[in-house]
Every structure is written in structure tokens, then in C-alpha cells.
Image 1 (spheres, one colour):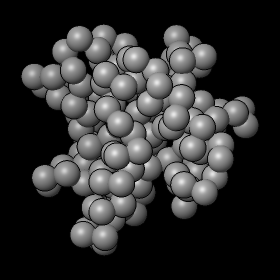
Image 2 (cartoon, helix red, strand yellow):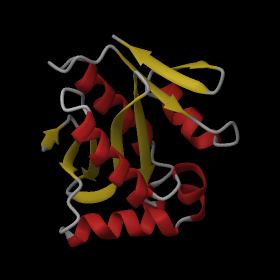
Image 3 (cartoon, helix red, strand yellow):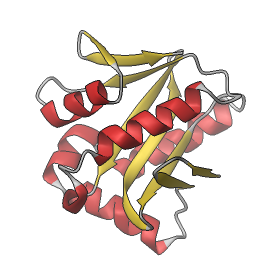
Image 4 (tube, helix red, strand yellow):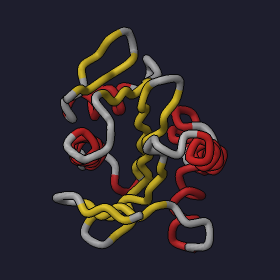
Length: 151
């Protein structure tokens, strides 16, 4: 699956694509990404299982490209009756507001698409101020460390 957004191009994660693997490896090696996102390879495996168990729901992990460069990872998973978004930006592309722009464009795409998605949540650690700011800038509202955006 490939998605063209206003400023990003998303390619569904492919374990045979060396560029995709390198993005995830870099995020997994980064101390902050690892702390807040956990093992992304494991998360992708869980997304693939959800894809099999909930075939009518949107469960996908993507590598995000900005100006033709891979800048990070974004996913949407159907977890316990909610759609949960997750995003990680490579260290060299942080502090450029790419996370908030990516989350905003991806959320708009999903909420305005033909998918049956009316609400997206982001569970953010209370210490993760950068992700809280990105979620707020992307239009998400906070409710007890869970951020959400609705149609």
C-alpha cells in the first residue's frame, strides 16, 4: 500500500526493503525512540497479526518520505475498539515539525477516507513532551495522557 499526502509519501513497511529496514533499525537504536515506541519490529509484527485478525479494519505500518528522503515511521492499529496512531521521526529530521505535519496529514487522510474511522487516539507518555506538542499541533486534544482527534 502506498499513500500520497500533501507533503509526504507513505510506503507500507516491507521487510525485504533495505531502506525500510534501516529506518526501523535507526529508530530502534535511538534512546528516545526506543523508550517511547519500544521495539518497532515487534510492533510491526503485532500490526501484521491484527491485519489477519481484523481483515475489515485498517492496520498498517509505513515508512514516511519527505522530499524523497525516508524520515520516519507511522502506523495505525486497531486495538481494543480504538484506532491508535504511532509515529517516530529519525533523529536528524527532528525539531523541524515533521512529526506534527505527518500526524496531521495522515489523520486527515484517514478520517476523510472511505475507511470506517471516526476517531484516532495517541497514547503518549507523560514525559514525552515532544510527542505531546506534535499531537497538539496536529489537532489532537488531550484527555488524561491520551490524545484524540475525531471526524
